[in-house]
Image (cartoon, rainbow over the protein chains, first blue to last red):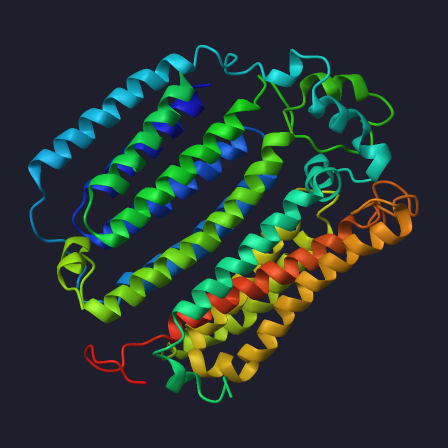
Amino acid sequence: MVVFYILLVFIIIGAIIAVETKNLLSAIICIGAIGFGASLMFLFLRAPDIAITQIVVEVLGLIILIRATISRDLTFISGDKEFFGTVVSVVIIFMIFLFGIRVFDTVPEFGEPVFAQTSGAASQTYLSEGLEETGAANIVSSVILDFRAYDTLGEATVLFTSIIGATVILRKKSRKSLGDLDE
Amino acid sequence: MPYALCFLLFMIGLYCAVVKKNMVKIVIGITVMEYAVNLFLIMLGYRFGGVAPIMEKDTLESGMQQFLNTSVDPLPQALVLTAIVISLGSLALMISICIRTYEKYGTFDITEIRRLKG
Amino acid sequence: MKGMTVIVKTIASWVKILIILFGIYIILFGHLTPGGGFAGGVILASSYVLVMLAYGREFVQKDLPLSLDSKLDCLGAFAFAMIAILGFVFGGTFFYNFLSKYGQQFKLISAGTIPLSNIAIGLKVGASLFLVIFILSTFRRDTSGSEKE
């Protein structure tokens, strides 16, 4: 339990540094540190699939982020902010935070999940009949590819569409350097 | 109490996405918000002294009831697995918009872009 | 984008094979150990990113051209849709697991359509992510702000 608090404090300090620093490269390195802290936290929360996916996605995300800033001359942010807009935003966010804390009384305590207290929960069926119905020993794989395969189809569609969008946006200037691709 | 720290992380990301002027800082704020939501979903399914939801060869004969009593929730893990890969795709799309705007206007500042019309 | 020194190129050409092997292991054993199609596909994409960073962009353009990469991407998505439609033909509902009674449990060949779906998803995710990183590195500023058509 102490491990969770240590990792969460590390992540919050990294997030505060990433938000407030003036150098863009330091902010991107702090995002990398937050990602590694989150992956360690997933490992201690008994989710090994998610930890593997988080680390490799973190590495590729860092490469994409650095590509946007490393060869541009403008890595320092200059100029002053408007004072009134900043103060109003901070006050509204603080009030949302105070109201949101009250909602956490309705969620069950940390450490006793919902599906252990209700009898007809879907996760009980997945755990007890997952091996006989699908034959897979990894219950999370059988959930995403057999019991709830529509979600995987939707995710493949969203990934496909966003990659096509990124390819189309960056197309016009580089027609000469891609050569004979669009003939 | 760990839920409150997760919510604080989400608020830090929201502050960064609303107040800052640099486009890459806005993208960083959205990324921090996504990490906070994934952490919160996995924390909802944790059980004290739990095991990962993966069966081995000897749980089928001897310990099926014990596996059912100590396993963590597999359903939020399935949702978060999809969400992490989708966040990578949308990060690529946001960064391509930033690069395109920089090539056209020469700056990352969003207030300058509003003034240079036409 | 130019390449790097000779030491980096030599080590990258050895390590690339290990990374591809690890990615294929995570994809194939996705129904027995943690992993699955998504993590394995991202690992496959990152092996090609390593080669691109070490050797320069033109070498990878000859090795894995963009047209072949787009076709691999579409092939992965098409294979996933075909598995779903075959489930409809043989079973009566969309995505029905029509091979789940063959094979023994806890072995490699078991669990029906789940390893096939893992392979299709891994191929699709890997090809997509390598495509987007290649496009991001090809885009370059030609002159100082004027548009050339």
